[in-house]
Length: 471
Image (cartoon, rainbow, N blue to C red; front, side):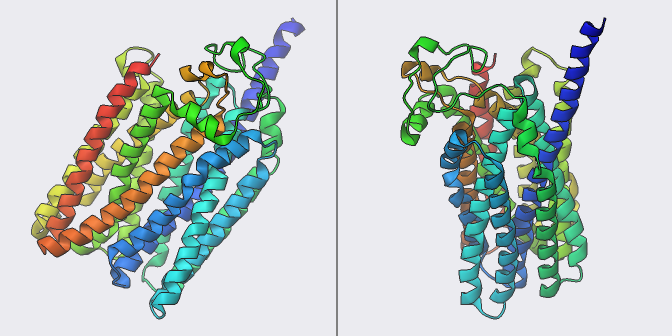
């Protein structure tokens, strides 16, 4: 009897330990989101409304920190070769939080010394981009290597839900603390967010790497040959695996030849482009059309992020009850999430068309639809990403290269970052140009939101193509 009960006890302890580790990873991810959301929403609105700067200025700064994240694949490749992850994670978090504080100081300086403020802001947003790249990519690689195959999808869902929760809580609490608005309050709130984020991250990462990798299966290094069909997908032919260590460019080229990975990259880019194009103009839109205060618009972002959280939880609830069949396929929910997001964007577009009577279309219900749609397609995309990160591309067997999770996540993370960077620039620049040409703020915002709705429809079509790879 003892021999039968002991393995069960060990499995239970292992599962409990894994969920504690997943929770710690989620805390770090939430702290990253808390710092980033302050710079991409609150500081963006202050630059446009309180300082009266063109929207393209804040759009360029926010886009800069996303474009810097094109280094994600290289960092993921380095994480695959590295045996230590904690220095990457904490170094990235330290760089991120310092950049967040510096960005708040730069915004304050813009009110009296525009050139000094702009130069400081350029440095700050570059720091933010580097910090997110180093911390975020390495954190996901560590999670992927330390969690079993059957837990990866659930783990990713849990971590992203915590990140969105961090977005929502930070936006709502910061919004309340910012009223009545002053630049001194802005500095205090930004410093407080960064200090809390750094403290919680440091506590969560202590011993995390050791716990995650202690009992995990041995990972195949870039210099090793495939020795077990249980470690990677069974599509690998061990006899065809090379013992030589591939360089970064060769590994990336091998990954890009896989049609499934390439198509998913296009989906990530298109959907994230559509989402990010509204991210930087939503608060200015609410300020101009609905005459919201800085605190109210910050809370509005909190409402959107809370709605995204609802969408994620909804998909987790549905997914646990639909196994197999068309509705059980992850790509189906990527598609429907994009369609629902398109409906939300059309609602915002309609509010712009009737700007004189915008109160007839309350923002909260519209953002609820948009946020739930965003949550559905994003959590479905994350689940797909975790599955593909540990799946062997068909093209790998042609040259024997092993493309590990780090560079895969780095590729899709870079696609998301570039989409966010370009989306911020295109969204803010389009709103500025439309206002100049059309001369009416409501119609200008409406045209941009309608374009984003079309992008979401395109993303839904790509998701339908990804569906043919579902097994």
